[in-house]
Image (cartoon, rainbow, N blue to C red; front, side, top):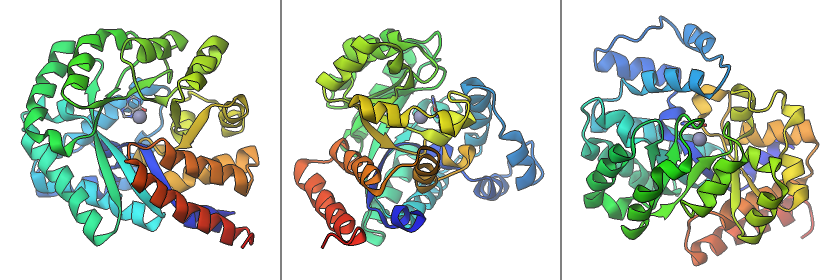
Length: 338
Ligand code: HPA
Ligand code: ZN
């Protein structure tokens, strides 16, 4: 099964580039920028990565991102992630980045977007991986700050596909960002948002009805409300589920209790993703393996999950179909159906 997962063509749709920052690379970049970090070894960092909740993690995640200064730093961070994609047969990645985490520290929007997008362009030619960028607004900050970010993004609009909403969920409902999402859609961005990770089902309703999102990041707490489940299915909206993130942040107590199978059985369209792989103990393939083992998923279940990852990506139809054909051929060969 591990081999089947390793070679399975797939897309990753929920990944924060700042959350892909591996401790070893963090030390290297901190050193070249002469920045002190409060850890002496990779082992010390790993010891600090024990979280009780989302906020616990976010405090350390923003601190880690603080060592990224130059365009080159953002390039190296992004290219390292895309190399991991290549090693896992991730054929397409939709990558979130948090501009405000950097602009609030005096790093220009231009530095961030140029570094990230040039790594994506190189990965396309050198690694044969396609990628789209999702500019995520930090929900703990005021809506005006998101508006400022939207404005800064406009000269680089051609490099960005969608807007997202992340950071501390509870107390920062989607409706707080109604106006900036409307303006973002007018500017040509596709609206996406984290909802129902720690927030209750009402946050998911707001994300759908107020922000008019096209995909739900996490969405676990949608299961609290059967009307909501029916509505998500009716609108054909997918959930980007992140199993190892859920256990690391105690959204789910044990991987054996993960509601992924229940979601599938209810008819929800689900995808598997890593969220912040450097912090949560595994890349996307480790996430597939964790749920496969815990929930006893079959090859056919895994095939459906990978199919969803392409079908609910933001790729144009011909490109989606290209990847789906590659996936189908792989599945038929791997299960000896042809
Ligand atoms: N939830 C909310 N905000 C985030 C996350 C997450 O899982 N990862 C990075 N920012
Ligand atoms: Zn996330």
